[in-house]
Image 1 (cartoon, rainbow over the protein chains, first blue to last red):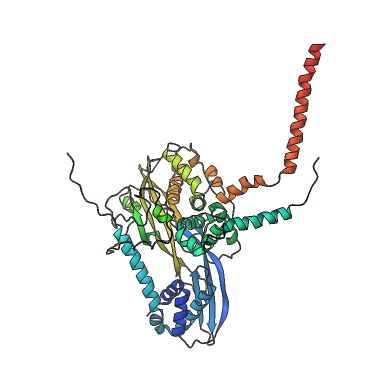
Image 2 (cartoon, rainbow over the protein chains, first blue to last red):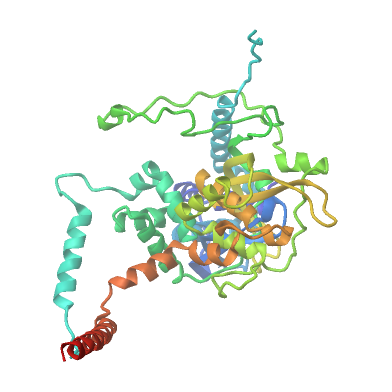
Length: 141
Length: 367
């Protein structure tokens, strides 16, 4: 079963179309009420000196957050990079639904996980094709 | 005499209307879409995000379109827009060690764990104009080749040296929030986290020139690229309402570890030190220049003599920001009619006095 952080990570990366598809698959949707947002803001990205030293502020990134509640009081949250308000609300609603029925998460979010895995694999394979294979040359005398 | 005047509204309106028309250009040429800018001018987008200090490809593309391709103007627009947004929880420091690597090279080790991965690079291209690109409507290029990705872990080259005791380790980070120059003005001496923030948003051209100067002898540098990596890193933050960290997406960053010799001082044995560069997007020149300048600015802490411009933190940090620099340089275009009038009157009165003094001795001689 997906943990909540795993679920939220998938919902953060899902496209608007994927979220719409997941909502259609979860229909009928219970009514929900917005608790906060969707609102666009910034998060300060940080790096570390030397990659592993003291933190420093690198620059900001836009993000959208949203919190919703279902009639029974279940609360769902969404935090996503970017500025897609509708998608953030859909992600928060799906989080609330899956908070109430966590066993459904895996099936409902499987297409998103599969697409992300395929994209990561394709990039890794392209990178691998550009790995240098050194050939040792015979010394020229 | 100077009389205060108002006016210019109609001229300004007409100028802006012309600007809008000039931005669009010849209407018979198709209009540029934001998606095209994002996809096909991706490195311009990256530069605007880095110098605008705001990661958002769509906003950067819009800024580039609005600025007619003037990237400093675009960074300015992005910086201005970001001030309209509230700041939520800060993210945890990016873990570049766990980067999903697209490119990773080392100039110090031929064979290193994880290998030399070239990625999508201009390196080894011949820099010959490709007129095939001028023929529009050509089919897209074939997909890039793929290979089995046995990509194991990619340890940092700096860690390999540090494990041997040959590389100065980074002092462990304080967990207190780092200083933020967007909230408080720069102060001197600037601690390294503040310097790195200023460099990360600094102008690529300015840092490139300074970095180059350290190589040419202005500052004692003999750098090696221990490692340059490009890839996607997870953005993790801890929303207060959840109380546990969650991953909210990925950003692409470029990281450079530049190795430099250090003769040792006091307790410190001779060892390598590193300069560090980290830039939003795919910005290798920026990351490398930043690493060179970061190392040069360590002079004070390492007890080296501060002789060169790149080692002078006030000089570097106060002039690296292109939005600030362009603001102060370009404000000279604004009306200075009163200031100039006073200069003019002063100069006229000085001239009158000098001429009067010159005339006086001649008058005496004539007598």
